[in-house]
Image 1 (cartoon, rainbow, N blue to C red):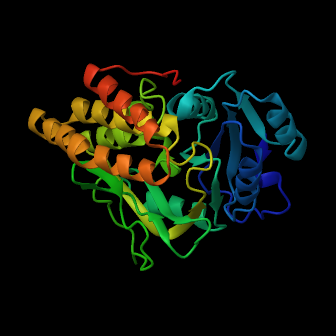
Image 2 (cartoon, rainbow, N blue to C red; image 1 turned 180 degrees about the vertical axis):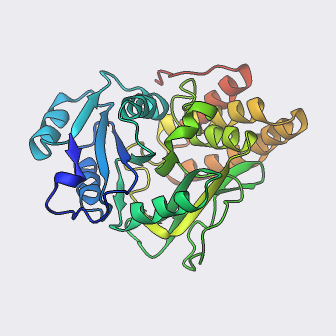
Length: 313
């Protein structure tokens, strides 16, 4: 198990720093995962441990990671449990060590050295906050924002400040929610709010969790002083069949679960009149219009209340 306190590269300057468990979720992606781990091990924070949750089905990848990072704890799930199931497994394992905070990372994230220190400081200051996220920048354009949380726009939680180059100056509540690629949780809140909804499997699990957190009076924060860089769609793929299916299905399921009936109807209206034509346009431009069937299947299953992992052909 990696322990920063014993790593000569990271000085132990404050024995009272809260213990943070850093959970990295990997699915069959060696190169990006290695780069993420390296950025995590280079963080300036002085009291963290790393847990790699392996959803991978490729054992050569797992073996290669063990060779490069022999001191890191690895939890093998045995199969792809999706974002929700994989992270839940990691959270439950981490909670056995009683950390004060849990830092969830996708395996395509580069963490700036001071990011975790800054995030922990904000949660130590804002005791009503359940979870915060750093400012997420594009990896290929590190001066351009990918997400400062999400905002509701025409019935959908789109990325807030996406493609902006003017950075927010101070910590603030997001207009709607947070994105799941880099999140620092106060560990104690899982007892009140619960874990991720594994019936969603993939996409919008963090949306559902953030809504539940706000429903019990917890706040969410975006911390611009902490930054990470994100290789967008490095694992799932841009406009892949899983993305199209789960992004459509799960937003319908989440809206039905948490919104009033009139607001849910508005979501459905915008899905069919705005987002469906938009994805048709994107796929047509790429010569892949036939893939729109996955989006339509997702909408259908969301309306029918079908959840869980879906085998897509």
